[in-house]
Image (cartoon, rainbow, N blue to C red; front, side, top):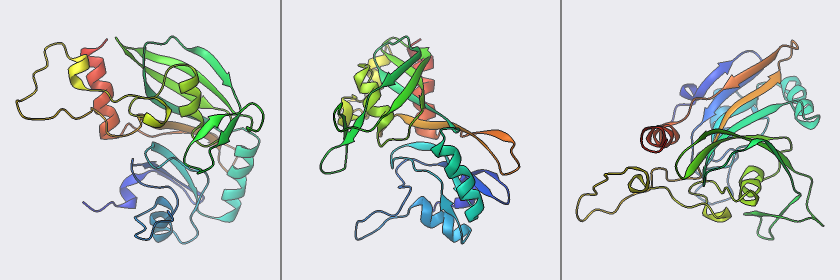
Amino acid sequence: MKLQFEDLIVFENEDYILINKPPHIASLDERSADRPLSILRLAKAYHNDAQLCHRLDKETSGILAIAKNPEAYRHLAMQFEHRDVTKRYHAVVDGVHDFEGISVYLPIAPLKDGTAVRIDRQKGKVAETIFNTLRAYRSHTLVECMPITGRMHQIRVHLMCLKAPIVQDPTYGGKPIFLSEIKRKFNLKQGTEEQPLIQRVALHAHSLTFALLNGEETQFEAPYPKDFDVLVKQLDKHSL
């Protein structure tokens, strides 16, 4: 099924387009030869002057702001720079955790190949994330993550430091989650292999709050995509 950019839009005015980015699509063009679709390319096909105001990892779903003109881009870029933008992510993590405004303030440096990051107190750049428990399950937790800075893989590596790696995030120690683990009477059909409940890092950019050009502070929300919604609903049903 072909992806229609119009179907992703959650808000649009003369300055901004806010979309709910699906998982498995890169924000910017990738370097590979058979370059698959990127959000930037879809946005430019929809509106010539479109510019992404920030990025989401390829596997991460959720709210993404796109500027339709240079003034709008500068206006939001300044808010990001001054840390006036509030970003709230939801993540399903391994283990049961009671986070109440827990702040992780640990510097981050990229690994040599640029595909992942590590905590580096000498060479790392300042990074801060605040975590709150939304719902605790039997062996997992739904967590709200508020990154104050915007480093690569920041939420993922900071959660690993809290011994709460994100489900299905092997890079940072997160394990897959199976229905058989959470549903008490689970029978798998003979001869079939059980698939994880979610096939990607269980991280979703839930909302973004910033001031529009008229000065009005607005919060934009992106509903859970199907895979994340199924995961949370199964946890709600079988694991509370």
